[in-house]
Image (cartoon, rainbow over all chains, first blue to last red):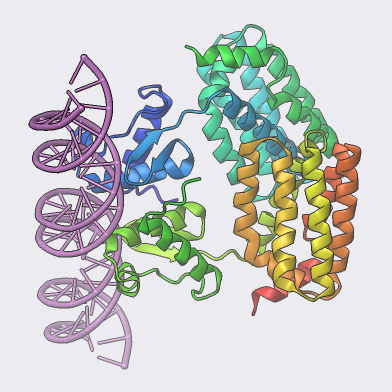
Length: 217
Length: 217
DNA sequence: TCATCAATTCTTGTATACAAAAATCTTGAC
DNA sequence: GTCAAGATTTTTGTATACAAGAATTGATGA
């Protein structure tokens, strides 16, 4: 575990947060000099951070012009959620035959904490436990590469998943789906787990309008 | 289509090639100064290129120590191929109901050129057409995000796929599998396409030993 | 002979300087 | 008043300079 972070990495993380949290609009240029001033560093670590943003897909670089924030539009989001759904399905398929008893136990425990959080209207805890639930399935694939890819996408979609789960009635339904997923994994039924996870993550029906609506806020 | 490449990007590509082609061993340190000399540039664009390598997973950076090439071992490769198999399966599932007639025609044409290449023992063409075959399926998903992710992984695995296809009897079998995939796509049978693609890409049975063997060369 | 620790050298990370391309402003013609 | 072309300013991309941490070397003592 290398907790050591070089300054450029720290700046990159902070910048990601800034882009996430809507401090920038789509198309905004990320001015190296202004950023350098506001972070009180030279342009060098700023440029390093900008490169990271570009390579993670949060921004776009146009040579000799600068880097511009690139927020996903409705179509991009649909595509990303669809991809996430397929990757989660794949994780479920593999995890069904590989997840450990400890993993299954953790899933159940996490689900209980999710339920409690719903009862208490504790959104933050709910989000956190929900994330753990899915990460436990990624881990269950016993494929660290796939696990890392899944976490990468999960992280990328995090801000949008939050807005989705806010909608009325979504959380109890989501919990019911979790139960279905766990049941499939317990039975070792890969196809069922894949289907349950795909449906759980997919943006379909009403969720679509809600997602679009949340973009205009 | 921005064909404009900044020098750092060009150097990054070249460096990837060098790491690919076995000019470096696992764990080798990528010396900024030596690289700068050999490319006849300053350390700045070299450092930019090294960052790209790190973020693409070809190298690992240890703060204040340098960046070291990180070649995947047998386990990493198995995990990456398994992930690729699942992603290709997902592409097949989606493409089955979305691929255009042009896409299907392109698949058949590409397969024919593949066959011809086998007959002529023209490995280079075979590899190239094989790549196009898969990319056509990615495109067929009508999901540009998934398409990009698939191409990224395909690119990452390219050097290892080549060594695999060299083995005796592999090319004709691979072609038969291509036919199966096209048939499923034509029927619009998503599940069949997914299964066919998963089996086609997966490293199983004999292929496993061959892959391991090719690593020690 | 081996281990340890200080001095030195090397390497990375950051700041600054400079060159070239892009953007902006100014001026002039119509 | 508008447009175009040249001059000026900005901004990016690259080179160089410098500071601090890591590696290495060598001297000293057991």
